[in-house]
Image (cartoon, rainbow, N blue to C red; front, side):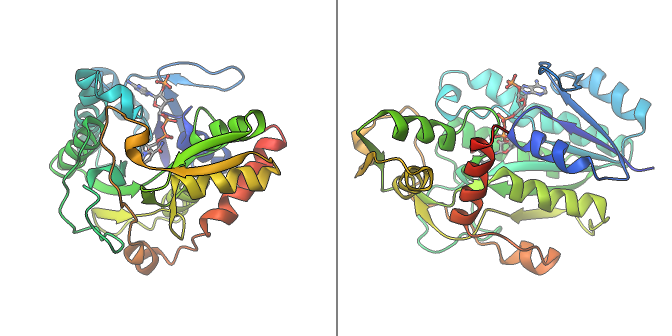
Length: 295
Ligand SMILES: NC(=O)c1ccc[n+]([C@@H]2O[C@H](COP(=O)([O-])OP(=O)(O)OC[C@H]3O[C@@H](n4cnc5c(N)ncnc54)[C@H](OP(=O)(O)O)[C@@H]3O)[C@@H](O)[C@H]2O)c1
Protein backbone atom coordinates (compact mmCIF):
# COMPACT_ATOMS: atom_id res chain seq x y z
CA UNK A 1 0.00 0.00 0.00
CA UNK A 2 1.25 3.50 -0.92
CA UNK A 3 2.21 5.60 2.12
CA UNK A 4 1.92 9.36 2.10
CA UNK A 5 3.16 11.88 4.66
CA UNK A 6 1.52 15.33 4.71
CA UNK A 7 3.50 17.86 6.77
CA UNK A 8 1.72 21.00 7.98
CA UNK A 9 -1.32 18.73 7.98
CA UNK A 10 -3.39 21.12 10.11
CA UNK A 11 -2.89 24.14 7.84
CA UNK A 12 -5.19 25.26 5.02
CA UNK A 13 -3.85 23.00 2.27
CA UNK A 14 -3.12 20.14 4.66
CA UNK A 15 -6.71 20.13 5.92
CA UNK A 16 -8.16 20.12 2.39
CA UNK A 17 -5.91 17.14 1.61
CA UNK A 18 -7.04 15.43 4.80
CA UNK A 19 -10.69 15.79 3.69
CA UNK A 20 -9.93 14.35 0.23
CA UNK A 21 -7.83 11.49 1.62
CA UNK A 22 -10.88 9.96 3.30
CA UNK A 23 -11.74 8.32 -0.04
CA UNK A 24 -8.21 7.14 -0.74
CA UNK A 25 -6.95 3.57 -0.88
CA UNK A 26 -3.48 4.71 0.25
CA UNK A 27 -2.28 5.16 3.86
CA UNK A 28 -2.04 8.86 4.76
CA UNK A 29 -0.14 10.32 7.75
CA UNK A 30 -0.87 13.94 8.74
CA UNK A 31 1.78 15.69 10.82
CA UNK A 32 2.14 19.17 12.29
CA UNK A 33 3.84 20.93 15.20
CA UNK A 34 0.67 21.60 17.19
CA UNK A 35 -2.31 19.30 17.77
CA UNK A 36 -5.78 20.47 16.78
CA UNK A 37 -8.93 19.52 18.70
CA UNK A 38 -10.68 16.47 17.31
CA UNK A 39 -8.06 15.80 14.65
CA UNK A 40 -5.47 13.04 14.80
CA UNK A 41 -2.07 14.71 14.38
CA UNK A 42 1.38 13.16 14.37
CA UNK A 43 3.72 15.65 16.01
CA UNK A 44 6.70 16.07 13.69
CA UNK A 45 8.88 19.18 13.43
CA UNK A 46 10.17 19.28 9.86
CA UNK A 47 13.23 21.27 10.93
CA UNK A 48 14.36 18.24 12.97
CA UNK A 49 16.40 16.15 10.49
CA UNK A 50 16.71 13.05 12.69
CA UNK A 51 13.00 12.99 13.55
CA UNK A 52 12.02 13.36 9.86
CA UNK A 53 14.50 10.68 8.81
CA UNK A 54 13.32 8.24 11.51
CA UNK A 55 9.67 8.72 10.57
CA UNK A 56 10.10 8.46 6.80
CA UNK A 57 12.35 5.40 6.95
CA UNK A 58 10.39 3.67 9.71
CA UNK A 59 7.04 4.08 7.91
CA UNK A 60 8.64 3.55 4.48
CA UNK A 61 7.01 6.71 3.08
CA UNK A 62 6.54 6.87 -0.73
CA UNK A 63 5.34 10.48 -1.06
CA UNK A 64 5.94 13.53 1.16
CA UNK A 65 3.61 16.48 0.59
CA UNK A 66 5.12 19.48 2.33
CA UNK A 67 2.28 21.84 3.28
CA UNK A 68 4.23 23.30 6.23
CA UNK A 69 5.78 26.73 5.83
CA UNK A 70 6.31 30.08 7.51
CA UNK A 71 3.42 31.84 5.74
CA UNK A 72 3.19 35.16 7.62
CA UNK A 73 4.55 37.49 4.92
CA UNK A 74 4.72 40.56 7.21
CA UNK A 75 6.11 38.63 10.19
CA UNK A 76 8.85 37.17 8.00
CA UNK A 77 10.49 40.61 7.65
CA UNK A 78 11.22 40.54 11.42
CA UNK A 79 11.90 36.80 11.76
CA UNK A 80 14.32 35.90 8.99
CA UNK A 81 15.95 33.01 10.87
CA UNK A 82 12.73 31.20 11.71
CA UNK A 83 11.34 31.82 8.23
CA UNK A 84 14.56 30.58 6.59
CA UNK A 85 14.60 27.46 8.76
CA UNK A 86 11.07 26.54 7.78
CA UNK A 87 10.99 27.67 4.15
CA UNK A 88 14.53 26.78 3.02
CA UNK A 89 16.26 24.45 5.49
CA UNK A 90 13.26 22.17 6.15
CA UNK A 91 12.53 21.49 2.44
CA UNK A 92 16.24 20.59 2.08
CA UNK A 93 15.85 18.11 4.97
CA UNK A 94 12.67 16.66 3.44
CA UNK A 95 14.36 16.39 0.02
CA UNK A 96 17.45 14.62 1.28
CA UNK A 97 15.39 12.23 3.43
CA UNK A 98 13.02 11.58 0.50
CA UNK A 99 16.09 10.71 -1.61
CA UNK A 100 17.19 8.15 1.01
CA UNK A 101 13.87 6.32 0.67
CA UNK A 102 13.42 6.97 -3.08
CA UNK A 103 10.27 8.94 -2.18
CA UNK A 104 8.64 11.75 -4.18
CA UNK A 105 8.62 15.19 -2.51
CA UNK A 106 5.81 17.59 -3.39
CA UNK A 107 6.81 21.12 -2.36
CA UNK A 108 4.54 24.17 -2.44
CA UNK A 109 5.91 27.55 -3.47
CA UNK A 110 4.55 30.98 -4.22
CA UNK A 111 3.97 33.77 -6.75
CA UNK A 112 5.95 35.97 -4.32
CA UNK A 113 9.20 34.63 -5.84
CA UNK A 114 8.52 37.04 -8.75
CA UNK A 115 9.12 40.81 -8.71
CA UNK A 116 5.80 41.85 -10.25
CA UNK A 117 7.24 43.61 -13.32
CA UNK A 118 5.60 41.20 -15.82
CA UNK A 119 2.43 42.27 -17.59
CA UNK A 120 1.34 38.91 -19.01
CA UNK A 121 0.84 35.60 -17.13
CA UNK A 122 4.17 34.32 -15.78
CA UNK A 123 5.57 30.98 -16.96
CA UNK A 124 7.55 28.52 -14.86
CA UNK A 125 10.86 29.43 -16.55
CA UNK A 126 10.58 33.19 -15.93
CA UNK A 127 13.45 34.52 -13.78
CA UNK A 128 12.76 34.64 -10.04
CA UNK A 129 13.43 37.91 -8.24
CA UNK A 130 11.68 37.82 -4.85
CA UNK A 131 11.09 41.15 -3.10
CA UNK A 132 10.39 39.96 0.46
CA UNK A 133 11.98 37.68 3.08
CA UNK A 134 9.07 35.27 2.59
CA UNK A 135 9.60 35.20 -1.20
CA UNK A 136 13.39 34.88 -0.88
CA UNK A 137 13.21 31.98 1.57
CA UNK A 138 10.51 30.18 -0.46
CA UNK A 139 12.67 30.48 -3.59
CA UNK A 140 15.70 29.21 -1.66
CA UNK A 141 13.47 26.28 -0.61
CA UNK A 142 12.73 25.51 -4.26
CA UNK A 143 16.46 25.46 -5.07
CA UNK A 144 17.17 23.27 -2.02
CA UNK A 145 14.55 20.73 -3.10
CA UNK A 146 15.79 20.69 -6.70
CA UNK A 147 19.38 20.01 -5.62
CA UNK A 148 18.56 17.50 -2.84
CA UNK A 149 18.68 14.48 -5.15
CA UNK A 150 15.06 13.36 -4.64
CA UNK A 151 12.22 13.05 -7.16
CA UNK A 152 10.27 16.27 -6.74
CA UNK A 153 7.33 18.35 -7.91
CA UNK A 154 7.16 22.03 -7.01
CA UNK A 155 3.78 23.73 -7.31
CA UNK A 156 3.74 27.52 -7.20
CA UNK A 157 0.41 28.91 -6.13
CA UNK A 158 -0.98 32.24 -4.90
CA UNK A 159 -3.44 34.00 -2.58
CA UNK A 160 -4.63 30.77 -0.91
CA UNK A 161 -7.79 30.66 1.18
CA UNK A 162 -10.01 27.97 2.69
CA UNK A 163 -12.53 27.53 5.51
CA UNK A 164 -9.58 26.80 7.84
CA UNK A 165 -7.16 29.00 9.80
CA UNK A 166 -6.72 32.70 9.16
CA UNK A 167 -6.99 34.03 5.62
CA UNK A 168 -8.11 37.02 3.54
CA UNK A 169 -11.59 35.62 2.81
CA UNK A 170 -12.41 35.07 6.48
CA UNK A 171 -11.05 38.53 7.38
CA UNK A 172 -13.11 40.20 4.63
CA UNK A 173 -16.25 38.25 5.59
CA UNK A 174 -15.92 39.74 9.07
CA UNK A 175 -14.96 43.27 8.00
CA UNK A 176 -17.69 43.60 5.35
CA UNK A 177 -20.23 42.41 7.96
CA UNK A 178 -19.08 44.88 10.63
CA UNK A 179 -17.98 48.05 8.79
CA UNK A 180 -19.85 50.54 6.64
CA UNK A 181 -16.83 51.18 4.45
CA UNK A 182 -13.43 49.57 3.93
CA UNK A 183 -10.51 50.39 1.62
CA UNK A 184 -8.61 47.63 -0.16
CA UNK A 185 -5.51 47.78 -2.36
CA UNK A 186 -6.40 47.79 -6.06
CA UNK A 187 -2.93 48.03 -7.63
CA UNK A 188 -1.72 44.51 -6.77
CA UNK A 189 -3.06 41.98 -9.23
CA UNK A 190 -2.96 38.17 -9.03
CA UNK A 191 -5.38 35.26 -8.69
CA UNK A 192 -7.26 34.26 -5.54
CA UNK A 193 -6.98 30.49 -5.19
CA UNK A 194 -9.02 28.04 -3.18
CA UNK A 195 -6.74 25.62 -1.32
CA UNK A 196 -9.23 22.98 -2.44
CA UNK A 197 -8.21 23.45 -6.11
CA UNK A 198 -4.55 22.78 -5.30
CA UNK A 199 -5.44 19.92 -2.94
CA UNK A 200 -7.51 18.27 -5.70
CA UNK A 201 -4.62 18.47 -8.18
CA UNK A 202 -2.11 17.03 -5.71
CA UNK A 203 -4.55 14.31 -4.63
CA UNK A 204 -5.18 13.35 -8.26
CA UNK A 205 -1.45 13.14 -9.01
CA UNK A 206 -0.66 11.07 -5.92
CA UNK A 207 -3.72 8.81 -6.03
CA UNK A 208 -3.38 8.07 -9.74
CA UNK A 209 0.45 7.87 -9.90
CA UNK A 210 0.74 10.75 -12.36
CA UNK A 211 4.32 11.69 -11.45
CA UNK A 212 6.55 11.34 -14.53
CA UNK A 213 9.51 13.68 -14.05
CA UNK A 214 10.74 16.25 -11.59
CA UNK A 215 9.86 19.87 -12.30
CA UNK A 216 7.93 23.00 -11.41
CA UNK A 217 4.32 23.83 -12.26
CA UNK A 218 2.08 26.87 -11.71
CA UNK A 219 -1.40 26.37 -10.33
CA UNK A 220 -3.90 29.01 -9.26
CA UNK A 221 -7.60 29.29 -9.94
CA UNK A 222 -8.56 30.88 -13.30
CA UNK A 223 -8.84 34.61 -13.93
CA UNK A 224 -7.30 37.79 -12.61
CA UNK A 225 -8.22 40.05 -9.69
CA UNK A 226 -6.85 42.80 -7.47
CA UNK A 227 -7.18 42.50 -3.69
CA UNK A 228 -9.97 45.09 -4.10
CA UNK A 229 -11.84 42.85 -6.59
CA UNK A 230 -11.33 39.92 -4.22
CA UNK A 231 -12.69 41.81 -1.18
CA UNK A 232 -15.57 43.25 -3.22
CA UNK A 233 -16.55 39.73 -4.36
CA UNK A 234 -16.45 38.43 -0.77
CA UNK A 235 -18.80 41.20 0.42
CA UNK A 236 -21.12 40.69 -2.54
CA UNK A 237 -21.26 36.88 -2.24
CA UNK A 238 -22.06 37.25 1.48
CA UNK A 239 -24.84 39.77 0.75
CA UNK A 240 -23.12 42.42 2.91
CA UNK A 241 -23.83 46.09 2.17
CA UNK A 242 -20.36 47.38 3.14
CA UNK A 243 -18.98 49.99 0.71
CA UNK A 244 -15.69 48.46 -0.54
CA UNK A 245 -13.43 51.20 -1.95
CA UNK A 246 -10.17 50.82 -3.94
CA UNK A 247 -6.92 52.36 -2.69
CA UNK A 248 -3.19 52.34 -3.55
CA UNK A 249 -0.43 50.20 -2.01
CA UNK A 250 1.11 53.42 -0.53
CA UNK A 251 -2.09 54.03 1.47
CA UNK A 252 -1.27 50.91 3.54
CA UNK A 253 2.49 50.94 4.17
CA UNK A 254 3.73 47.42 4.94
CA UNK A 255 7.15 45.98 5.78
CA UNK A 256 7.14 43.34 3.04
CA UNK A 257 7.18 44.49 -0.58
CA UNK A 258 4.63 42.58 -2.65
CA UNK A 259 4.63 42.11 -6.44
CA UNK A 260 2.23 44.42 -8.29
CA UNK A 261 1.49 41.73 -10.88
CA UNK A 262 1.78 38.01 -10.15
CA UNK A 263 -0.70 36.23 -12.43
CA UNK A 264 0.69 32.75 -13.15
CA UNK A 265 0.48 30.98 -16.52
CA UNK A 266 -1.13 27.56 -16.00
CA UNK A 267 -0.61 26.07 -19.49
CA UNK A 268 1.93 23.52 -18.25
CA UNK A 269 -0.28 22.07 -15.52
CA UNK A 270 -3.20 21.86 -17.96
CA UNK A 271 -1.09 20.16 -20.64
CA UNK A 272 0.58 17.70 -18.28
CA UNK A 273 -2.37 16.74 -16.09
CA UNK A 274 -5.50 17.81 -18.00
CA UNK A 275 -6.71 19.28 -14.75
CA UNK A 276 -9.96 21.35 -14.74
CA UNK A 277 -9.39 24.67 -12.96
CA UNK A 278 -12.36 26.68 -11.65
CA UNK A 279 -12.81 30.43 -12.21
CA UNK A 280 -11.70 32.18 -9.01
CA UNK A 281 -15.14 33.69 -8.25
CA UNK A 282 -16.87 30.30 -8.55
CA UNK A 283 -14.32 28.69 -6.24
CA UNK A 284 -14.73 31.61 -3.82
CA UNK A 285 -18.50 31.20 -3.80
CA UNK A 286 -18.14 27.49 -2.97
CA UNK A 287 -15.75 28.26 -0.11
CA UNK A 288 -18.01 30.96 1.35
CA UNK A 289 -20.98 28.55 1.32
CA UNK A 290 -18.82 26.01 3.19
CA UNK A 291 -17.81 28.63 5.79
CA UNK A 292 -21.44 29.72 6.20
CA UNK A 293 -22.39 26.07 6.82
CA UNK A 294 -19.85 26.04 9.66
CA UNK A 295 -17.18 23.87 8.08
N1 LIG B 1 -1.40 31.17 2.20
C1 LIG B 1 -1.13 31.68 1.01
O1 LIG B 1 -1.71 32.70 0.59
C2 LIG B 1 -0.09 31.04 0.13
C3 LIG B 1 0.18 31.59 -1.14
C4 LIG B 1 1.13 30.98 -1.96
C5 LIG B 1 1.78 29.84 -1.52
N2 LIG B 1 1.51 29.33 -0.27
C6 LIG B 1 2.24 28.13 0.16
O2 LIG B 1 1.30 27.08 0.25
C7 LIG B 1 1.70 26.17 1.28
C8 LIG B 1 0.51 25.91 2.20
O3 LIG B 1 0.11 27.16 2.75
P1 LIG B 1 -1.07 27.24 3.84
O4 LIG B 1 -1.70 28.58 3.67
O5 LIG B 1 -1.88 25.99 3.80
O6 LIG B 1 -0.19 27.27 5.17
P2 LIG B 1 -0.70 27.35 6.69
O7 LIG B 1 -2.19 27.29 6.74
O8 LIG B 1 0.05 28.49 7.32
O9 LIG B 1 -0.17 25.95 7.28
C9 LIG B 1 1.18 25.70 7.53
C10 LIG B 1 1.22 24.67 8.64
O10 LIG B 1 2.59 24.34 8.90
C11 LIG B 1 2.72 24.22 10.31
N3 LIG B 1 4.11 24.34 10.77
C12 LIG B 1 4.75 25.43 11.24
N4 LIG B 1 6.00 25.11 11.61
C13 LIG B 1 6.16 23.78 11.41
C14 LIG B 1 7.21 22.85 11.62
N5 LIG B 1 8.41 23.25 12.13
N6 LIG B 1 7.03 21.54 11.31
C15 LIG B 1 5.85 21.14 10.82
N7 LIG B 1 4.81 21.96 10.58
C16 LIG B 1 4.95 23.27 10.87
C17 LIG B 1 1.85 25.34 10.82
O11 LIG B 1 1.59 25.20 12.21
P3 LIG B 1 1.32 26.56 13.07
O12 LIG B 1 0.12 27.21 12.46
O13 LIG B 1 1.09 26.02 14.44
O14 LIG B 1 2.56 27.40 12.93
C18 LIG B 1 0.61 25.18 9.96
O15 LIG B 1 -0.29 24.22 10.49
C19 LIG B 1 2.93 26.80 1.95
O16 LIG B 1 4.09 26.24 1.39
C20 LIG B 1 2.83 28.26 1.55
O17 LIG B 1 4.11 28.88 1.52
C21 LIG B 1 0.58 29.89 0.56
